[in-house]
Image (cartoon, rainbow, N blue to C red; front, side, top):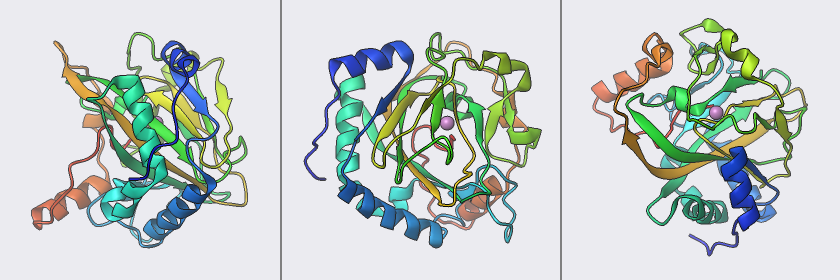
Length: 280
Ligand code: NI
């Protein structure tokens, strides 16, 4: 891994702890972004991970032959180990260790591709709504656009301080369709969505948010793809005295899960999902 070139300032650390998110203008260099973008495009062209359920349409029903409106690849470095040799990963490691200490782990979690014009919004949600209800989490997602991220193509938006208290609001599958992997805030909870802050970024910039932060990304209404790669990091979850009731995950029935089970039964080695896999 290259030598890290990044460090958070104390002001940035304080802002993140208080507001629950952070916007960073440059987490890596244009050269590193160009290299990652090549790898990224190759993974999506090859539909890496499709058979194992690691590649699927986050916002659609994901039938074979149907154009995906928001393809996602979990664990991209499992399909392109050269991602582990990027400056982005080295700099993300510094950031994670500054926030969570030396015991924290980090790595590439997923990649989300929003094709031009047809890709819908990523609705408001909290990442922890996808996760194991038996645990509380101290972890972050680091969202990195590989071109400019704007309001027009779907930059990230946050509700400042919505992480306080680590509550998880009610969610459901997008459009209330349990065949869709992606989750959205239940309409009954939408009154919590107010004072949103949008975070446009240059390529190689980053936003940071924890698992309880409410966030959203707009549709891609532009003429170019919106590419984002997401890393995560943090500490192991801590077991809760009383598990949460994340009932929306029990009723979900996706083709992605079917493919993952079939691959497992066929004896293919299935990678354990990274922390917080499958969000956004
Ligand atoms: Ni998310």
